[in-house]
Length: 349
Image (tube, rainbow, N blue to C red; front, side, top):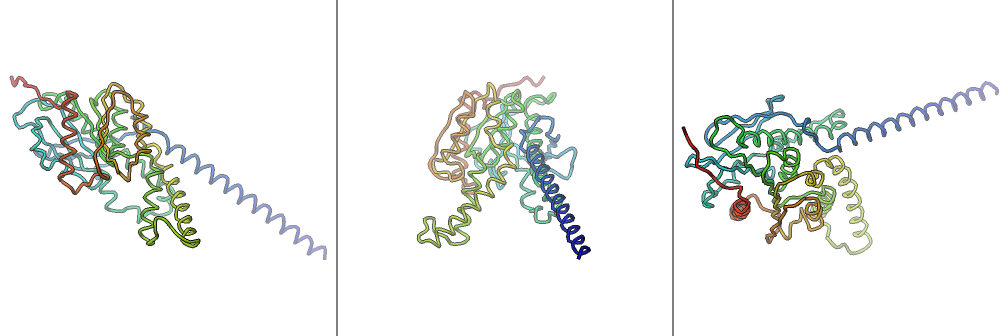
């Protein structure tokens, strides 16, 4: 009997040690996870941005390529002054699905200055859906991988900014005045770069811009969930109400998780650091991605001088050339009023 008691006591001791080891492992895992999260959440620093370079393929199309990772590249389309004048420049970066179409019908604006529209570098990453092949190691590092994609987008935008701000020796196309124009998912990148490169940015246009990623994800997860499961927006009955409550709880949890990873990308982190640069917002009154409460965060964070313009309708439709042209007209009018869409004669001698 004493031998059985001894074995039982030994088993209890072993279970206690296993429990302690598991608890220590859990604490270590949570501590490491918290440390990684804190590192990811930090605002972007200039020295983090990878270097990219611009290569002009012809008079209208440029290639922007990462120096450290040459497989990463994107395209920009250039529309310059046909009379060969030194002109101010606007750089456009908007949603993932937009590119050259941003310049469609731009010839009707009578805008003589330079315009560059860049295809979003994240577009290829999204289209390839590389996360579908992630293993355990990649998912453990997903925050760092997403941050790297954001940094490379800033690197491409920074390369365009430095290429067009008049610093190129002997290039008579560009003045030192460059406006960064970010629309939709392009807005956070232009706001961040305007903060980090304020000496090279003369104006900032934020078009249908959204931040408050937690609120955005929450609203979209709930909306998409109700569409997918054919749930009414106003449930009736205990069962329907319980399902809706569960959907909103799940959406809120996922939204918090993802937005925590992207906290460093929220525009209100960078807007207060912009100095002596006019900022202009163009918004949709019924924009589901950027409701009034979300926009208020941006407006309150932005320093003077600032202004805004409200247009009827929802979030801008990149497939609507009329809407794009209308926004382009307002952008040009604002830039002209700020003295940022001019050209000057130059001496070719």
